[in-house]
Each structure stands twice: as C-alpha cells, then as structure tokens.
Image 1: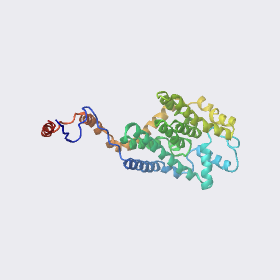
Image 2: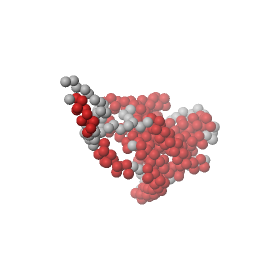
Image 3: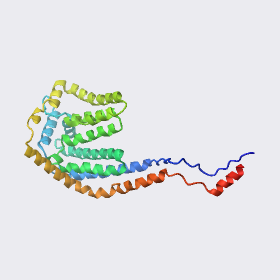
Image 4: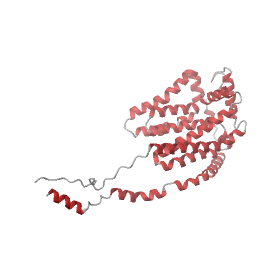
Length: 322
C-alpha cells in the first residue's frame, strides 16, 4: 500500500539539545562600544581637568620640557640630552613643542587625557571579552577613577606613567585574542615609554605555555617585542641606549623607602582608592546579580524535551499512512 507523508510542522529536536544563542546584532555592539568610548573619554577629561591649572605638576614635566627644547635645538638623545628613561616620551614632548610652540605643554596634557581614555576603553573591551557586556563599563570606569587615587603630582602630571598605560593594556588586549605579534609590538611601545613596560611579558608567556602553538606564538611575541627595541638602539647607539635605559637605575633599588614611609604611602593610596571607587557605586545596579540567579532556570527550560505533537494530528497521519 502506498504511504503518504504528511508534513506536520517542524521536526522535534532531541531531548537535551540546547538551541544556539542568537548572535547580537553588529549595530547594537557598535552602539555599546561608542557609548563606552564617549562616557570613558568624558570621565577621563573630568578626572584630568585639574592638570590644566598649573604650569608644572612634577619635576619630571620640567625636565621633559627641557629635553624637548634641547632636542629641537639640535641636541642628541643620550648625548646632549641624558635621562634614565627610554626616549619615547621626550620625543613626544619635542613633537608637541614643535606643533604648539615653546608653551606646548597644554598639548601634552591633552594627549594624556586621550591616553587615559584609551586605557579605560581597552580595559572595558577586555572585561567584555572575559565576563560579558555587563562588565565592560564598570571595569573602564574603575580604571579611569583609580588614577585619581594617586598623589596630585603623580595623578596630574603628563609624564611616563600615563603614556605607559594604554600600550600595556593593549598588549593584554591583543594577547587575549592570541595576536602575539601585535601584543609584542605593544610591549615594545610600553617599554620605550618606561622600562616597566616589559611586565606584560610574564602573563603573555604563561598564556602561550598553556596553548598549543607554543613555538609559533612565542616567536611572534619575541619578534614584536625585540624588533622596535633593536631598531631604536641602532638609531640612538646600542651602547648609550642599553646603558641609560636598562643599566643606569641601580640607585633606585639600592635606596628603598623605610618601612614606616612605605606603610604610610600604602595607607594613603588605599584611602584615596576607596574614595575614588565610591563614585562607582552608581554602577552596582548594572551588575548581573538577577541574571545570574535566573541562568539555572533558563538552562533547564532550554534543555527540556519539546512537547508532544497534537494527538489528533498524529492520528490523522497514521490513518493516511495506513
């Protein structure tokens, strides 16, 4: 007897099959990113607004300004101009003075606002990748707000530390995406800003060892880090570059602060951090506590077997097939 197939709707999925999550719309993701960028840029401007109110906030700003003037007059780095720091920030000051004149420190401070905003944005992207969209904005706000916890000469000065931050976070940002050549280049930029920029190499190396393409990824990281440093050394002279950047800071290690002074600094920094982070309590309602409580129920509903088909429809199908 001929069998007639009757289409009764979609075939039920096997029990325990979880339907795939719908991909977020690209436009929505871009809108969230744009909002984060705008908010974090405004917060960075608010945090660093007092930096425009004084000629100099620290001796480092004055010395960097002097270096920039000498370099513009034809001086050579590590020859006529000597500092126990890498050359990137002196070159940045020189470029700003060339664009804005001898009183171009305001332009350096504008760039410092941009560096802090970029740091917050990159931290927000990292938090979004690791924990979800809910974590992005709070992580960025905490990062920008934390800079206000430093003493005013350090928090407001447009010196090595503020320009070190975006390159350091960029190294981790690219490392999280396993793009180790770019991560190495970011480490090199951070190191050419201040020597402690080499610090991301440790977590990046641990991440590479936990992966499968160890040799290839390690080679990319090393190449990205070493190539800019080597090029800079060749331009400035290998011997003076390596000495003034890596081997001239022994006095810092030989004269550490006493226990009382270190404890006082740590306590003051902690108090300032708590004060700065108090502003972020407004973000607590955005945290996903309710969503986290709902997830087990959502998973149960997603994995439950589909309901049986209508009995009458099933009987009709059997009658036609018979």
